[in-house]
Length: 235
Image (cartoon, rainbow, N blue to C red; front, side, top):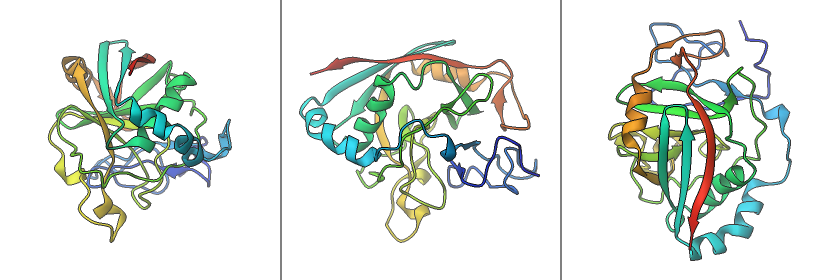
């Protein structure tokens, strides 16, 4: 069974060791770890290469390494320090989404207490936001998926497939770290920043009541909305 929102060109954004693809559906067999929901690649609003856009802004971003964004959610406010020195292209890509107000009124669609929360791709009614092209992973940047960090979600089978979705690590998830280049699993997941204020807000989000739907697994019963993400410092 395939949910009507899921089309052949979709990529599954999935965290290794957490999620299992289950017959192309948004829901998983209850005996398995839940899958991240798909996002429509055939619904692009923009077709330019994300890497080419990121490359244009990379030097400027790196020269202004103290880059912060403030994320206002229905549960509270979180301030994130982005690491443009270690993940320049990833930060440039993320800021492009921020500047386009892509994340406004999107939701955290997957929550697992003590582990992680995932969002940035869907509105409250389950509509997939259009996304830019995939970017080259910088997971080899020596930043670790420890508690309080933000990292990019991607297809489990292709390391260079991150677009707009991101997750916050709620525990020290070193199993997501880069360990080599032989397989996508070895390549790991790219950390590109760290929460400097509001980690308690993320912990509050992590304990909200969740349920499974036709589209999402372990999704909040009452949507947790990302109201805005805005850049607050760049110097």
